[in-house]
Amino acid sequence: MELQVKLFSALSTDELYEILKLRCDVFVVEQACAYADLDEKDRHPETLHLYYFNTDKALMAYSRVLPPNQSYPEPSIGRVAVAKKYRNQGLARKVVQASVDTIHQYWPNQHIQIGAQEYLLPFYHSFGFKNHSEMYLEDDIPHRDMLL
Image (cartoon, rainbow, N blue to C red; front, side, top):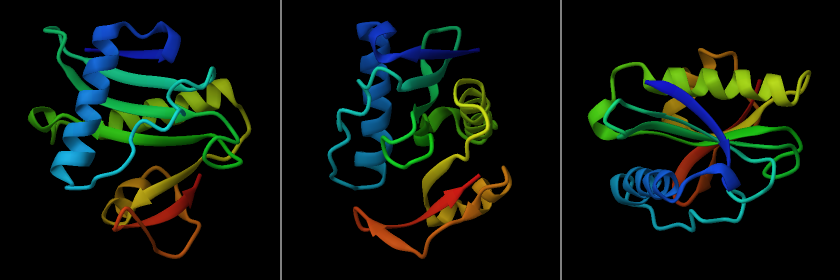
C-alpha cells in the first residue's frame, strides 16, 4: 500500500473510475444523499487527489485536497472516504494526515479549512482542527466548518 498524490490530468481512466465509484458508494449510496459530486473542483489545475490502492489495485481510501479559494480562502480537504471492506484499519487517519502534510508542502504556513460532518468532529479534533462555525445542514447532513 502506497500513497499516491496526483493532479486530475495525471489520473488514469481506471484510477478516476475507482475514485468516483468510491465517492458514489460512500456519499450517495451509504449516506443516502443525492448530491452533485462532480463539481468541477476535481479538474482544477491545482487540485490534488490522494489515495491508497492495495497490491491488487483495489482503492482503499481517498481524499481530495483543494487549493486556496476553491471552497474556502484556505486550502481544504474533502471527499474523505474509505472503502467499506478496509474500514477500522486506520486508513481514514492515514489519508487525512497525508492530506494535511500535502497541504503544508504545497501551501506552507496556511490554515486548513474543512466542512466536517458533525459525527466526525472528535476525529478531526484529534488532528488539531477547531470548530469554526455553528452547525449547518449540507445535503440534510449536519456539518461544521473547522480550521487547523
